[in-house]
Image (tube, rainbow, N blue to C red; front, side):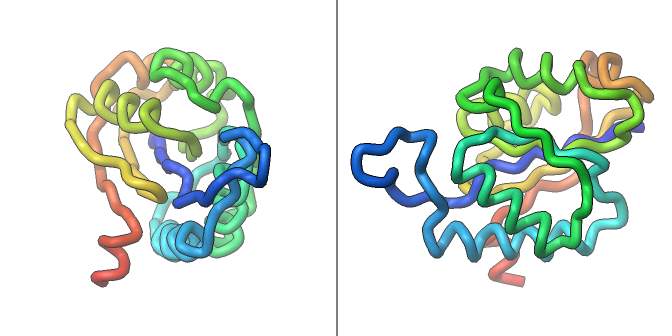
Length: 164
C-alpha cells in the first residue's frame, strides 16, 4: 500500500519589492496555518517517509514549519519542476521516487495540486492555502499506484482545524 500526502503551501504575502512570485514568503496567517497543519500531521498514525517540495520560498517555509511542528525528521527534496507543475509533471516526479518510500508528502501550488488530487481520486475538492490531503493506493509500487484510482482518506484545511 502507498500513501500520498498533498499539501498546498500556506498563505503567502507579497513578494519583496521588485521580487518575483517565486520569492513570496509566508505571512503571519500562513505561519499559523502551517503550525496547525503540523499539529494535525503529528497526530497521524502513518507519517511520510520523504518530502518532495517546490523550492519557492512560501513552499519551503511551509514545509519547514510543518516538519518542525510535527517532529517530522525525513529527507526533504526540493525540485524546481514542482513549481507551477501540471498534474502530469507531478505524476512523473512521483513515479521517479524510490520504491523504498511507502508514503510521500508533496508540497506545491495550485492549480497543480487540486488538479492532481482530482486526477488521482476522481473527486472534486477545494485546496485553499495549507490544505493537506491523504490519498491511499492499494498497489505496492509507485508507478502502479499512480496508474490506479486512489482513495481520498481525508482532506483538511486550517479552518477545519480551528473549528476543532
